[in-house]
Length: 323
Image 1: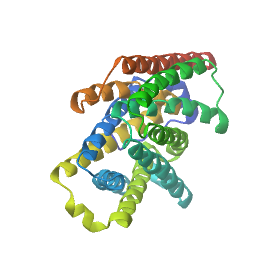
Image 2: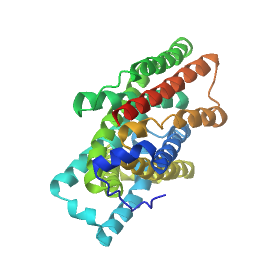
Image 3: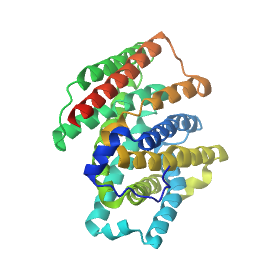
Image 4: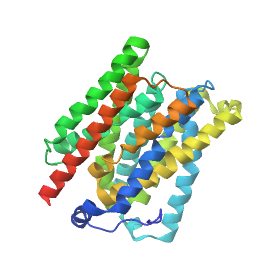
C-alpha cells in the first residue's frame, strides 16, 4: 500500500489503462468507504448529548485540522516535485473544491442527521455514484452508460420503500432530512469530479491537505461566529471523544484512503466501491443505536445494494468495451 505522502505520477492515459485492474486502488477506496460509514453513528451519539450541528462539525474539524497541517508542512519541507505545481490558481481551486466536498457537503449531511436514522442517511448518501455518472456526462465529457439506468431505478426504488415506511410511522422531518442528505450526495459527487482533476496536478496527499484544511477553517469559523470561543469549554468529555472519533476515524483516515484510491482508479470506479458503507452503518446502527430494522428496511436495503451491484457491473462492462 502506498504511503500517505506518496503521490501518483501516472498520466491520465496511463492511469485509465491501469485502473481496470488495480487491487490497491480498489482496496484503498473500500477502506475509505467503510471508515466514512462510521461517521453517522458518531454524529447520532453526539446529538444524543445535545450538541448543535455547527459545534459538532467544528469539533470534528478541530480534531482533524492539526493532522492535515502537519502533513502539509511535511510535504512542503520535503520539497516534493509536485510542490512546484502550487500556484495561486491551483491553491485557490483546491481550497474551493475542499469547501464544496468537505464543508458544504458535510454540513448538509450533519443537518440531515437531525431528522433521519443513521442507516437511512447512509442509504441516501449511497446514491451519489449515480450523480457522479450524470455529472460526468453533463459537464465533463464522459460517455453515457445507459446500462446504469436500471440500476439507478432499482436503488431509488429501495429508498422509496424505506422513505414510505418512515413517512407512515414517523413523518416528522423525513422530507427535509432526505432533501438535505440528497443535497450532500449531489455536492459530494460534483466534488469527486473536480477533485480528481486537481489531484492529477497536485497529487492526492497535497490536494487533500489543502482542501481539508480550508474546509476545517470554514467549519470552525462558522461555530465561532454562532457560539463564540467559550462554547468549547462547555463540552463534556464524551463530546470530545466523539469529536476525536469523527476527526480521526470519520475524516482523516478515510479522506486519505478514498482520495488515494480515486487517484489510482478514478471517480466513477471509486464511487462503485461505496456499497460496503451502508452495510457497516446498518449493523452498527442496529446494535449501538438500537435503530429499527423491519421487513421494509430489509427490502429497501436489498434493493439499494442490488442497484449498486447492477451499477458496478454495467460500469465494468462499459469500461471493458471501451478498452
